Length: 160
Image (cartoon, helix red, strand yellow):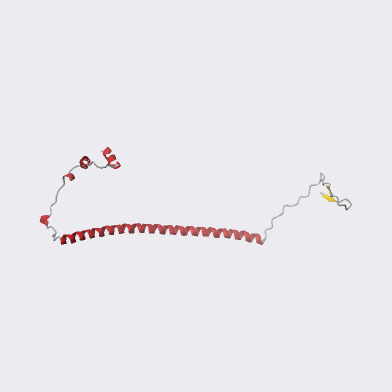
C-alpha cells in the first residue's frame, strides 16, 4: 500500500493500493533459484573443531570412568585387608586373654602354695550324659528346665 498526501495538507493520508500484477497465461512467475549454502573455510573449521571437542570430552569421560574403576578396586582390596586384619587382631586378643588367664591362675596357685598335680593324681571321669542319645539328653534337660523357653527351643521341641 502506498500512502499519498493530498495537496500537502495536514489531513491524514489515504491509503491507495497498487494493482497486483497477474502473470500472463504463457508466462511463469519468476522464481528465485534456491540459494546454495556457502561452505567457506570458516564453516569447515568450525565443524572440525566441534568434532574434536566432542572426542576430547568423550576421552575425558572415559578416563574419569577408568580412574573411578581403579579407585573402586583399590577400595575393595583395602576392605579385604581390613577384614583380615580385624580377624587376626581378634585371634591375637583371644590368645592374649588365654595367656593372661593361665598366668594369673599359676600366680595365684603359687601364692596359695599349690603344686601341679602328678600323673597318679589325675582322674578322668566318664559322664553318663555323654552315653545317652542327644534327644534323650534334651528331654531330660527339658524336664528339669522350668525357665523361659525361647521360640527356637519351642520349634525344636515341636520337631522332636
